[in-house]
Length: 264
Image (tube, rainbow, N blue to C red; front, side, top):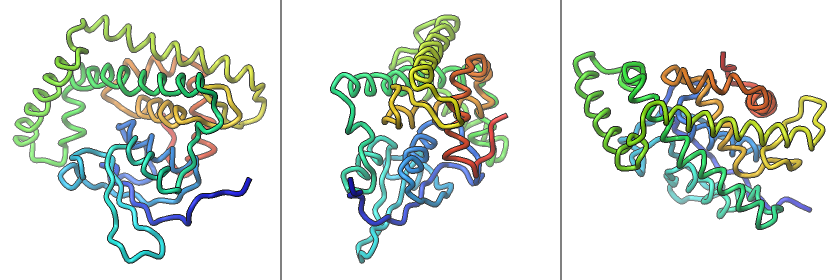
């Protein structure tokens, strides 16, 4: 079947970091980059800042239509950006060939990562390893300002986590929740790899298909974020203890991100 994708636009992804060729701590940045790379859609990167972001958060994107005199469009929120690019004909829907049940599974796994695991990891980073996070996020500021702004950020994160519900659990309970999620994802990957009988270095996919579904860009992003983030040592240790998770990420890295520095 012939491709119906439009001519490639000029895309700049603002990822909150000037460190080119390296994964960042935010899973949503890597999710967006992974989705673009799955489609072979070229893009540039820049640091940007939440102040200039359309919704006040990283990542965001500026896209210029080819052969158009219209002004470049700014887009925000990784999920909405991907949907917009699919709607504009720049990305295929990876879930087109899935059954209704598979689509529901894909959506549920994305929610497990983005609406559960994300907040458990935010707690680990901002509550259990606050000073590492403060230095990472506000290290460009003079130290007295780091202390002030860091305190405001900590209070904001604490209020968010309490309202969302995560911080109403104990540290031990949150740690157990994180491990349970990673354990379940590793188990799914073990089955997927076995069913596909992958013997070369080709990637295998979470739902067991011959190509990625939408959840694969999210899972890969969360694995990378966990492995490179120094403010989440317990999560990093958990992921490194699951061979299928590491093998899955290694294969995607080698295929789609050979220009990026490998996690340690």
